[in-house]
Image 1 (cartoon, rainbow, N blue to C red):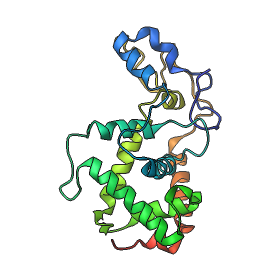
Image 2 (image 1 turned 30 degrees about the horizontal axis):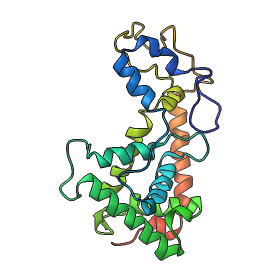
Image 3 (image 1 turned 90 degrees about the vertical axis):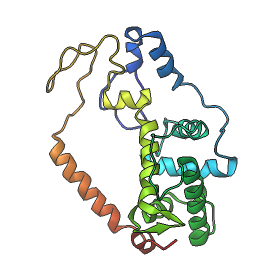
Length: 230
């Protein structure tokens, strides 16, 4: 049975995307299965930075329990190899430098407000500090706050949604090459796809998500909701 991130009941029970590997070419299979291998020693972030980055990524992706997708290792390798998106904003340094500066900024805020490293803070304290960056207008620690939050999310989501465990979670059948898809259309599935468990209308779901965001914002500390100048 295919695993999914976290301990929640799977949306697509029994679906395991790796069972489709016989239909992929050799290169694709090697790339996908490499993502399931244990990570090596970090090559970009140092030991002091690693704890903060891992905690940040867990909060951004709501990875609160096992199994977790090791997005840290993917991002660490990507930054070491300087594999960006092919562009950067003029008011933000190159991605590797922006990551280093922003992690140093998180650590500085953690020490200033709580007297401890970011990774050692309680979950809600970490969320509050991250929300300070997300909601802040203008500069934060010498960097454009909204650009920084966008950078974090872009890297986190790119690494997360490229992982087979997450494909299991969202019911994605994996690479279409060379087999392809033939049953294209609303609520149509390929023979290897699995029906979603307890599928719901996305409109009510979206309304609940918006309500949850408002509830979350109402419980933030004043420092998180108001931000601070860099």
